[in-house]
Every structure is written in structure tokens, then in C-alpha cells.
Image (cartoon, rainbow, N blue to C red; front, side, top):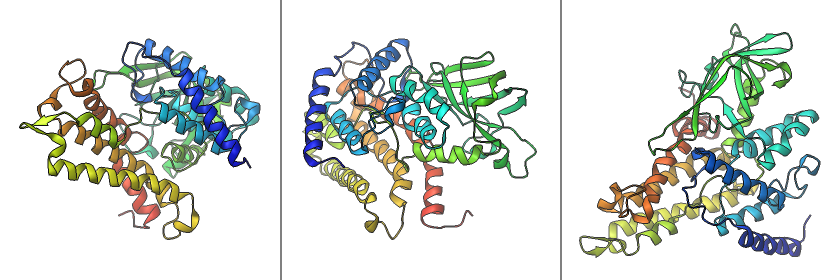
Length: 400
């Protein structure tokens, strides 16, 4: 167990390193989240930064040393992440690897899988994407129809996945595919693969978003052959493994390697950017309705912060154990959406201006942030699905 002095010394060291190594403005628009990496220029900038962060000793601190991690207590990564937020450094873009695939492989993967994949995730050499959602099945993940048919030492994949973030850059995909269409329960016919992307028959096509940016792809599999060794566990265990993966994605399980997955935005940033802005000749911040809305946001933001601390103290969550982690994704993404919406709405006529308009408040940051935030309220399970999870698994409500 680290001493208080050791933690203090590490915090000082991390703060100094961030100050000395934070990259300068590259002169082009950087993604606000890992879901907007849409150009080679952005990718190479962020790949270099993540590699620097890892080689400097501030990423993967709690992952095993033998696989490229730091082999330290999780508190050290928490401190490093806090200093990243303070310094407002760029994001660690390989989030699906760092936050979902990596923890999954470390938890249930074989020694061979850990040796093959973990270090490349940390160093940003190997980018990962996720192949869960399909165009025809919306939030009904259990009804996935992408097929994986065993053929000797290979599986042959046919089907389509959508919203595969950075699919056009990824080397590997965590893939949920149907190996047994005749299974009595649809969930029992699914299997989970650590699938290579650089094989014939895999065609990721970028999707242009309302912001004009890219980041998502629709990925087509046409007789794509992957080694049978890519399967995790056994055939038919895909649903169980996918649910474990979603626990990481939704923030209910620890284990992520660290780093920032999106540009940090707090209510203080909204207030700062509204200073000097006027409506009907009066400062916007003097409007009593707007002041009340901002205070409500401040209170809610504080509640989220205190809730995260409370979740770590079992005695304070005996009424509904697990409720805070299970509801975290729903609460935080919807809070962020409403915060960004408020920032745009309070700009009045300026709210209609976007990135590139010299009259836009803060260069159109809030408009772009508002549009981009919808990906967080959809990815990992829509807000509606998250509400169902809370209702069923926390409150014990019936499914119908």
C-alpha cells in the first residue's frame, strides 16, 4: 500500500511531466472525443501523444508490468488522470482498446492473448474498434445476425456492423457474431471474437456526421476469413462476454488503462464563455432564469462528483447496491448533453453560428460539443436502454 508521501510525490511528478510535455496547438481541429478521429493528420498526432503518455509512465499504470503496464496500485492511475484533466492534455484516443478490450483480455483472456494484444493497445500501435451494433437491429444486440461459420481452422464472417468507431484505422475488432442460428435462445447462438481487420473481405466505410466530421464507419464482412483461434471462450458464450464488455463501456467495472477519452467540460467553462455576452443590452449572466439554470447545473455536477466517491463506500450504498455505477453512464451523458445545450441556448442568436464563423462564441466550441455529445448518449446503449437497465437491475421493476 502506497504511503501518503509517495502519492504526493507522484502527483507532483505527474503535474510537472504534463506541464513539460503537453503538446502545442497543432494548428488543426482536434477531436473532442475518441469518436471524432476522422483524418490521418488527427490520428498521427494522437497516436504520437498516447505513445508518449505511455512511455512516460502515465498510462496503464495498474496493468501488469509483464504486458507493458506499470504494475502499480490503481490510485496512481487515478492521480495521473486527474493531472491530465487539470493540464487539459489531448485525449488518449485508443479508448476501445484501453477501456474495453484491454480490461476484458486481462480479466478472462489467455496468457497468449495478453502477450499478443495488451502492449500494442497501450502504445497505440494497435487500434481497436467494436463490432456489436448492426444496421437492422438497433438496440437489440441479442438479435445480431452477422454470421461466423467454422471452416477448418478458420471462421468465415458475413454481415454488417455499424457505428464501428475508427473502424477504418483499427487493426482489431471485438466482434459479436452468430455461430449457431438454430439455438433455442437467440443469446446462446452468439460468439465473441478478437477479430483482425486487415484481412480480405473486411470493408469499413466512413460515415459523415452532422458536424461534417468522421469517426464512425459501417463495416461490411464478405466471406472474410479469420483464424479460429480468434474466438474468446467457447462458441455460444458470446452474449456473456459481450455483457461483461459493456460493463466496462458503461463505467460499472474498473480496469481501464486511464487517459482522457474526451475533452473535459464542466459548468465553470460554460459560465466563463458567457461572460461578456449580452442579451437585450444586458449581461446574459444577470438574467435570473439563466442564473437559476446554471446553479441547477452546478448542483447536479457536484452531485455526480460526490456520487462517484460514495459508490466506493459500501456502507453508503446498501439501499441499492450497484445503483451508482449502473446508472453512471445514463446520468453523466445526459447531464453533459443538457449542459452543452444550455451553453448554446444562452448565446441567443449567436447559438446558430458554427465552427468557422468568426462571430461564433468560443469559435463554435459549444455547438460542435452539443452535436458530438449525442454519440455518447447512444453508444454503449442508448439512454432509453440505460433507463431500462436501472429500472430492472437496480429498482427490480418488471420487464413489461
